[in-house]
Length: 297
Image 1 (tube, rainbow, N blue to C red):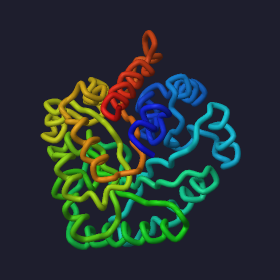
Image 2 (image 1 turned 90 degrees about the horizontal axis):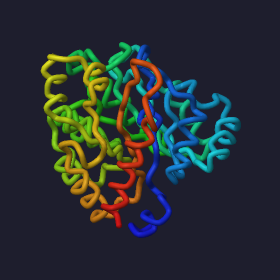
Image 3 (image 1 turned 90 degrees about the vertical axis):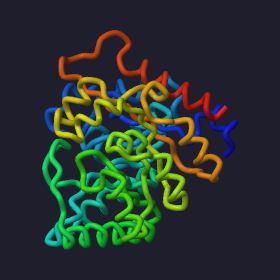
Image 4 (image 1 turned 180 degrees about the vertical axis):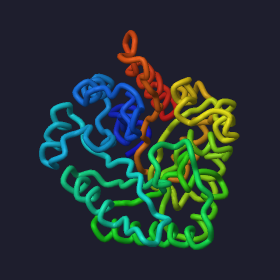
């Protein structure tokens, strides 16, 4: 698949329900119905989507696949927050259930977040060496098991999880062989340089979430001056090309290195006051999609 193919067909560019405010965090805000979200993805010309949280799409695999096909969409896979650092907890049954859903819908990516075990992303504990060893061991167990079942498992650095910043990423690089979902916004929000991390680990990048961010607001989250959820509600995540991440450099570096995986458009939003006004989130997703197409043209 060439860049021009992508520009023409939208192949390799996927949507994400979080761009419509659909999130796994309790109390996040209004959850728009799947029918609206999928219809708007189809209207934009997107041909693939990540799953979104449990309960958003039909649970039964064939029903889920059929529902997506109604909107001419295929499944990519999705985001799975899992506790990995607790040696008394085996995450494999949770991961296997997600892999089952992927295989039934012809999706192929399991995006792992190293969950803290507490809902939300506002508090992040510090792990000791024993907990880090358990986390890294579980990452490799899951990566190997996923490969045996025919899908890819990747770890997603994410604000408020146990793999968040550049030091955490380096610890994963040095201590495991799992691939990464590079999320440009979450890494930048944690004070890391997503382009530099990508260039240093091109062979480990297997999935990409394209997200832009107001880094000044993100710095307040890292400094515990505001909560992650309040920052999201206040617009910390930006339309691609309008924030502080060099999205163009990121895409060009990946394309130049022969990356052939997915680019997932994400702009986390929260609707605390009910129904979004006007056209709603589709306008921002359209702008982000247009930006990516321009870079790849």
